[in-house]
Length: 332
Image 1 (cartoon, one colour):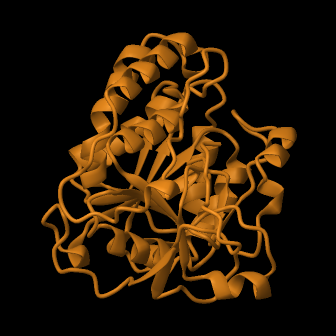
Image 2 (tube, rainbow, N blue to C red):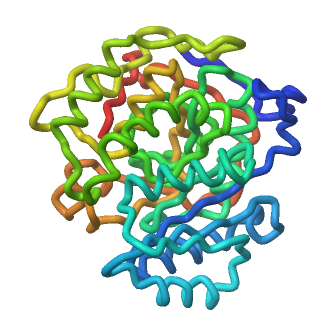
């Protein structure tokens, strides 16, 4: 089942009453050590015309503590010449979970942005990245049941094979590497994220978070069932929608803030959308949660062509593959 929809013109006013033409948009980048990774990401971000023209505000969040290399990261930022609005340098180490939750709190709750784009330090962006992402976000905001949009995906294929697929969009539960979330969606999921943060991340380092207690928290959340947002909805067929956590195994269920974000979106009745074809490349083969073996297992070696010269202006959403089978996406 496929349905077509234009990316523009979007309705003049969105679910939150804000005109999409005047939405204040922040781009949050995240750095902790690895100045070479950060420089590769930032250089690519600087090729996006929205950054050069000041359409978006770039805010750099640098975690602190041993190994942070904040001075080296500041030097990368200054040397790059990429415009930015602010550098938020943490005096201590928050860890990935508190850093990402804190950035959403500061930009959406405290600074009054209408939406934000999160960019980790191990993603390389094409020059079409922000144009495509914000077009998709503009369209998606008319639907009360869309939570996040992204234009990074793992789709194998050459330029010739993937170019006819540029307009295709699908549901996803894939790992968060870079995505856009609106204030409207954040308001629906932040109670879950704030409870997770307050109860499980404040007393111990993120790397020593209490996994069993978090899994109990996840099970308790799932008992409340899924909500259905008020307003105009995309309403994908039930066969196309999948719980990212149909079960929460005590010993193996992920407990990261990404996992809790994915769970919170699902329970709020919000869908995650991605373009089928990527406009970015994930190169994080080594990191806190990744090794070359995990990189291979997750399929990241199968990322296809992503260096496009133009952005789609229209999109078509697909719920089935080319053989007519329902698409299925698990959290990974």
